[in-house]
Length: 244
Image 1 (cartoon, rainbow, N blue to C red):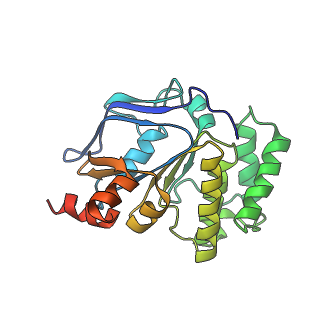
Image 2 (cartoon, one colour; image 1 turned 90 degrees about the horizontal axis):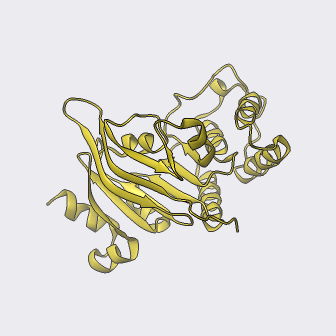
């Protein structure tokens, strides 16, 4: 297991305004190595804004996301080495590149990684996910294979923090199982996983801690065993909060 001394991600008084009507506000959260926190909430609650703020894609109006001493919105180079992002959209795609060319580009960007190690990790990740379409252009890949490329791209540099937005979308049942097993291994190896999802059963099954967001604010934060003890299931707790 890799050692993770003084590795943490902290959010302090974070405010992100997306429109005149919507603002994300997170007063304080802390994420430590070796666990999985699931971010849940209804449509429009702010989950994706939260995810993108973590990885520095959105600059906050105020407050800070501190990743191992780096400000995610100001020190993007350092943050990208520490964080792997698996988004739920295809905005990142360069359709003219083949998957092989895209991965080569990523490896060249992460200059602190030995290319031999990165290529070995690429082979292992591709094998884990049953991905073999290296010579196809990204724009021609199926939705499921595009998702596999996203997962590999998010993990190829062996990040301390893995930020995932709707892992299951686009994947078939076999790929879902393999992707889940992969994330579990990363977690047991010391990585911190922060996963946004609409699937409450998935969050209850895989998550250790739950952060529930409604209308841009945290309305609930607890460990999954406490939620089950008090409400019977995460779904029950979700309905209690949203129907209150």
